[in-house]
Image 1 (cartoon, rainbow, N blue to C red):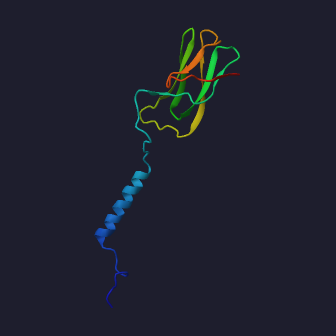
Image 2 (image 1 turned 45 degrees about the horizontal axis):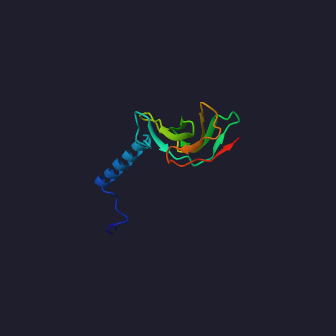
Image 3 (image 1 turned 135 degrees about the horizontal axis):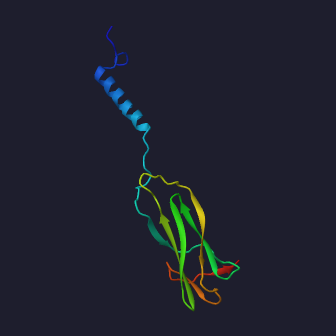
Length: 137
């Protein structure tokens, strides 16, 4: 009786190729892959202030929140004049070479302390140039 295609033994070359491919796949399993391109210096971007800005009872500290991820940090800075306060919100990524950053997002509270009480000054968003509504705590 002549063997059919289903009863044939695998040819040595095909078996060797299958073994080589599975070995390479298993070897790669233990190696980590990078999620993002590592950066050696922090990168920063300015963000519009989209969440509530709150004035503390001291009349000089304004706080808002910014969504941040793994290797990110938010910062609120400002510039003051007699009539206006301009707030700038920035998001800085601090990722070291070879570091993988967590993908979860949280809200980071950021504050700016005025040199003098806010009183009747207008608060502006440095990214958009639009006035901000500030609520008192």
